[in-house]
Image (cartoon, one colour):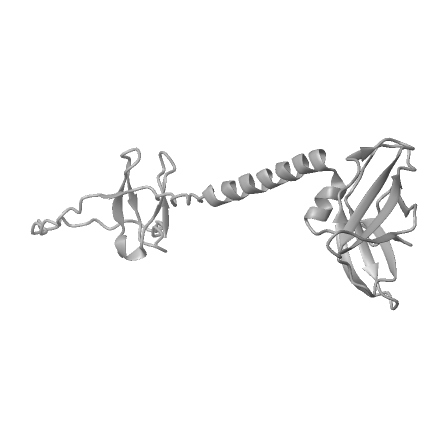
Length: 232
């Protein structure tokens, strides 16, 4: 059962058997106020009405009663206020470390994009882009020739241009040799001829490979990380 101090309002949780059937004197631990707490469910008896018409008979003096045995006085029970539940402190260390790692990764990605361009970042991460706003084409017939030592040299030349109205980053170029069925039999990467192209600007590129397969029938060039190419 709950008890409340009539002076300061402090609340206490007390078992009913601690009060007893006859009630008990209680002392507040917060303000030191004492009061009598009746037994749970007990109520004071109603006053007995006395009829005014009925005369009262004289009462003979009663013999002195024997002194009743002294009842030990129970000291008032001092109650302590209800203790508050301790607050649980959460360890935020792992979350702060995770947030710091994510922030470092984001800043590193931004720096790489600024320095290398979006196409280069995507190609190095193995992410294929849907479209590069640049044109690419083979401008001369591929050149097959024998060089010293009996090796066969294959050379390809082409052009990259920027048809947009904004400066664009230039990716590396992928050259592929294919057989008559269109299957790729040899491929290599040609380093980009320029890092960036101004609006309307163009630049030439050249690439060569040694000891390519003899069954190569055509060549194609494309930007690394895209599926758009030009065949010759």
